[in-house]
Amino acid sequence: MLYHPQCVEEIWDTWLYYESGVHYLFTLHKSSGAIWDGISLSTSKDGVHFQEVGVIIEKRADAEWLGTGSTLKVGGRYYLNFSESREGMQGIYFAESDDLIHWRVMDGNECHPDPRWYDVTPAGRWDCIWTVPLEEGGYVGYLTAVPLTDEPGRTGASIGKVISEDGIHWRAAPPPLFEWGDMPSIELFEVGAVEFFDGYYHMMMGLGEERLGNRQLWRGLNGQFGMYHFISDSPHGPFRPVEDRFRLLCSPGAMTYFSRFYPYPDGMLVCHHSCEQVNDQPQIFLSPLKRAFTDGQVMELGWWEGNEAMFGAPQFLDMAAAECAYSARGVSTSAEGNAIQMTQNVGGMVLSFPQKFNPSVGAMLTFQCCVEPAPGRMGAMGVWLGHGGKRTAFLMETRGRTVIGDLEGGNFKGRNEIERGLRAGTRHTVRFLMRFSLTELYIDERLVQCYSLSDRLDGTMGFALESAHIEVSDVCLAPMIC
Image (cartoon, rainbow, N blue to C red):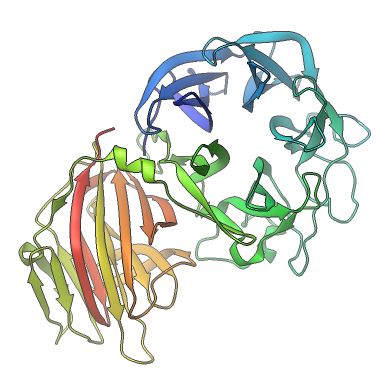
């Protein structure tokens, strides 16, 4: 939604490094064709508006493809790791820099899996070290790998461990353990990042709930894929799933993926990418940065204040000019200025705004809402967007969940459920970002969902209101200025 370098055809993994007031954005890319073959760099002064530097690492001629990595400062020099595949087997390689702009691949500095602990055939993996400094000195790193052992706590794990005394030269170590507690163990996929903050070592791990064997998890509508949250008291593990909020950044299909931690002076941030789902040359974009909010062991992603620089001046929307696109019998509304109320009822209403936004530029819709259903009933309100002659609605329910689905007349068919919604009788703040075919919804500054629509947006929008006394106020629309 936020940014895509123009010098390359496609991006995938993203990560950032902050130094002296500058955000350095690294992206794994395809320069052209079907293989990942390099890493490109962009810079920003505010974390929102980026300028391309260009390609900094290219796949070497004898490698089949190139994989992602991370960036580390040791002394006064910077080091970047990346993987390359040769004869179907990956190895980790390193580049160094004095300024984060110009990079030199280091000859003779390599890291490979140890056959005592890891699969070293083409069926194995050895990709993307994320480094963690140790209190006693030295570093531990986690990467995507295929452990050989079937010990309890390692079954199905796709993660390896490496260690280093100097942060520059790395060697394989036995893989970490996982403790699943009351949850059934499942097959893991790729480790995104591990960082220590707020009393725990937090790990973000990629997996998919639709994989056979992984359906042991509670299952949301249409399944889930993305990043999941583990914690540990030690950098060496064991890591355990955070059962209350195990799903961290998930969606049906690959709408978002591979979140990475981004240590920043005002607190821990997280970056990730979002993928369009449209058929006509879908694009992949860096998403707006998220803040990592923690409460005990639980971590959630939310709004980062720096993202305010993404938008121009907001304009209040005149709710009295909104048109009724559907109404059940006995439903009435009253509107004044940028506020609207709906009477308590057992049906619902769909409102269309006369204002449109430019989907190529993007916009953010913000408002306050309070939904009060009758005792024993569920109320909901949300935003709908037009695309491809259809409407997709994001309904925030008072039973504590949000459902995304098709809105046709007065009928709604859910396609994705998220375990975050509204509390009856409580005033909430809502942010809704939209650009191209991509959306992001926040309630009270916590991320609800990043969702990709099946078509490019057409700029039409409105509210859907259901079965409650509903008050909506401070309705504003701000254009993106990225």
